[in-house]
Image (cartoon, one colour):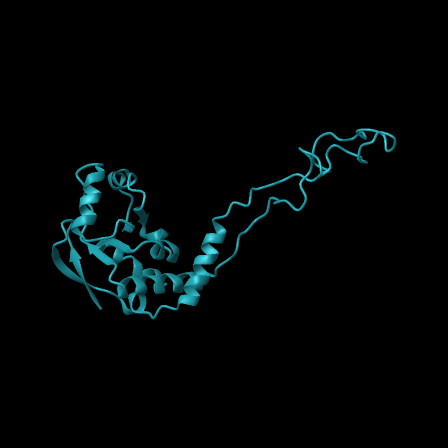
Length: 207
């Protein structure tokens, strides 16, 4: 498998070999759904917490006597029936964390990358040397590369100019190749990756 290498203006400047073991795997939607679901579940903080009647402050004294008042019988103002009382079956602090074995995570990434290639959403560029941290440069690059605004830009090392220039485009995300995962690849329509970052992907699956 081969892919064209483009410059920032979208002009072909060469070709690069795409490893079949990384970009030529048949995607399985059910498997990718499992990986994405686990990833999204792990993003949940689980910090929502409501108090039961035993945790709400106050309410130790019976609000009024049991009989002869003409009012309903109550034993505490912190009953769930009362305003500012305890909550019945409310959310409690918990962990939503699920584990995805590394082998399955790698396989999910391979299938996601292969799906991007099949959909024609892969763009390999020779480099990302920006003159400055200007958002219009990133916007023009996406236009020249004929890439969807919902794109994932993958680099081999952190570039402060690129990070600052792209942060004003909410649909664009910049990520290091070492942090690449199936969820981020599938969440955006185009994968824009530098040639140097592409060369670091294959060794991740050979080790």
